[in-house]
Length: 226
Image 1 (tube, rainbow, N blue to C red):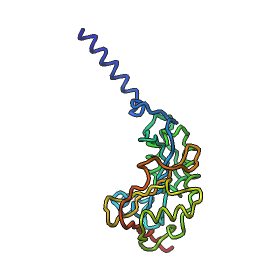
Image 2 (cartoon, rainbow, N blue to C red):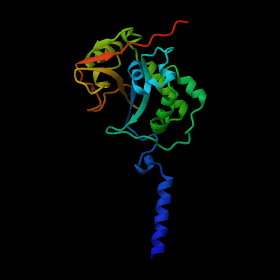
Image 3 (cartoon, one colour):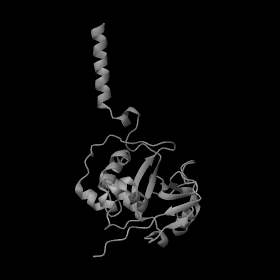
Image 4 (cartoon, one colour):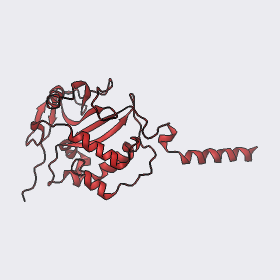
């Protein structure tokens, strides 16, 4: 009996070892409801501890404002992540091709492994979709390369983006910042899309999240004179 129980334990251990955490949760590539496109405000990231170590995005030679943080498959509640994929390696050519809008090698790799792997797309299709959706968002001129702090409110930022993008309304946009209620730096803007790339209203609870009275967009880093 003991020998039989030991055999069963070995079988269960082997079965668990062959399944990824995503598989164990029943997640499969391509099984999701909609996308969220995240636009990160690069100066806020670069002012933090992680940004200080990110030379690709945050060196003095760089001058990024909004960048493409990622494109995330979502359920109406929750999201899949780290789905099984045969494309675990990202070629340097792919990384280089995305560096103008996703200026961080680590970010590109992370976004594919955690989110892109669940899209049901191959790497080429996934990153092409990120580019199409990101470049399809018109950024108002005041946010393109500010030389000093922009102080606004979450609501005003959404209004500015909606005014510049007729296909988007306020229900499709979420603003994220720190936990402070008086004055907080912008972290990112998120826009919801249907699976075909059409803008859509975000599910309840996924919209405006920043509750600060004053929203600050730190200035873009100046380029070194050449």
